[in-house]
Image (cartoon, rainbow over all chains, first blue to last red):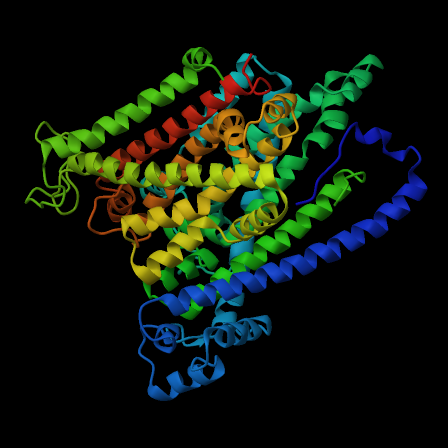
Length: 344
Length: 272
């Protein structure tokens, strides 16, 4: 975990910058490479653990990997050979990890095609859903959180805090259900599920209409979290000395908030947003199931129901990779937000 | 954190009230002894004096099922989270206090559990081994303790060099005594906050698994009720609304308890 050393406002950052910044940039590159290496090592460990999980499931590992679709003997022999299943466990693990590193996540007999292809097919829809939800949630969450934080203790703060507490307690799949019942079943304003309508498929407007409910539901899951974190963070920032300086030189409260307090309060917001980017898959599985959205979450759901082992294992590994990538993005954004961030 | 400050916290009291409500529901379910799986001829019957919350698509009484669902949710929400708290305290204290090898090992484990989402592990485990309630509990305990350990570790690191620890040591107190008598009590508030939020998450995971159809089929789950209700949203709102409210109340209870605990303990977040 990177440790950040923050002591003042971002306005002070130009003081004596050049030499230190040059050194810092080299340090940052080294830091990123180190994080990348440890991320890859972590992924190898996750992949190995996934295989151990599969091989500890009841029954012959080759059978488990072939899934319930019923494989012929020839295919089982092929799996055993490729993953060295007749050799001791460490060999099995290392050949599984090697295969995964080369992008070979096995073959789904249920889907009748390589796991990798199935996942790549679904990725765009998942990213569209998650990206839209994250953007909306960030906009609404940070705005409401800053308002609440800058009016701490007032009635606006109380109202926002109460609303976010209630929203935070709503189970996401139930919320989705209620929205479907209201906007699709009763009012017929929006489609109940899917990504395109059968009668008139294809148009951007059509996809957007299908996107509103699932993205809104997913965003509502994140907004309360962002409100709480932004509020605390803004309160914290407003108590710092550089804010007192900014006020003393006559800036309006609005300028103080937008130019001084908020940029410094964004770090935990970035942590949450990138955290959820890494959870695109699992964060969305319930929402995608309710709204029949053809993304990775839905793929996961179908794989669970069909006991499609190679698909489940592949999704586990891909999900862990997304988390590692998201963490790297977070590190880069921390650095942009505050160049003095000290990574060790 | 004083008990008096806690009792002054409206959030804590309200959360406690809601939790007691859910607990009472679970107790009531076993007292009444009505079979939550017994079907009847009156299917999708709206709330009436005979069935206070109506019946579902198999004619089962929704009220009975909501009460039994409370027992299921609590079984997953409370014991695994307490187990994780104990494990986390033990691991966090020893890592923070002794440092070096234990600490390095703990950091690796924590990193690992942060990379693979808990819900995904529970889902895959349920798919492979069947979604028995105890299995879900084990997965939750195994994935919740590292976050507790991390918080306790940070506390222990900042406390171990303080004067009162130094004083205890110079009086000849053993490491074990210092840990148990001096450090442990000071880490409990932060553990309590974390644990109560985790209880809510645990209930969400149990109901989420059941909603996806991989939960324990031998017990009634609010999640499974909501999944069944999905097909009848237009004609039988009560099959979705009541289990949903019940789950919402439980989550709200754990969030309020967590907020109340953290308010009365941490002056920085204390409400004006």
